[in-house]
Image (tube, rainbow, N blue to C red; front, side, top):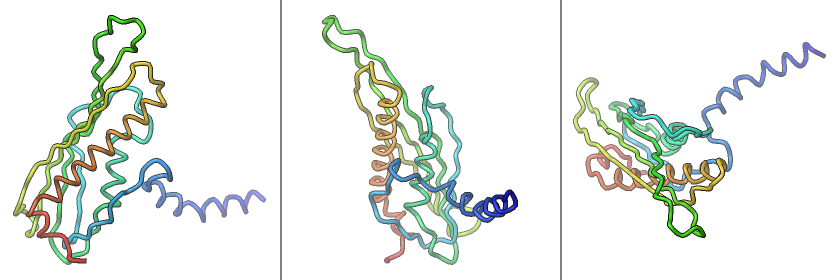
Length: 182
């Protein structure tokens, strides 16, 4: 029986490994169709400068962004590459002053920031185009939110910042040069 269990575990191990990078159902969903890029490789590099606020449980902002990149862009070309360097993806919490009225709940502002450098390479070493995009989203909430409620707000803010990044990316003519017509 133990041998059978071990064999079953080993047989399912590759499936578990391939699913490790996939987004769990209900935590994240891509709202737009994937974009095929006329490049051989798509690289996503994290060079993060700031840490996130304490208490951020999985999925972290970096995890959500990784899921988005995997779902949003597909390499469909024979040469060239697009490199996304993520310099910043974090959430900042700024408490407001306590209200004078005791019946009003203290408020806090959460702000998500996403800063990415996009480099398009047609040759192996030198980028032909480089541009930067900063996307932000914010929300004012009650200071008395539970950790679970805060996590939902944080995740929503990250997704909104990613959507803003996606819209800004779509405006870049340079980026349209590497998208396929399909």
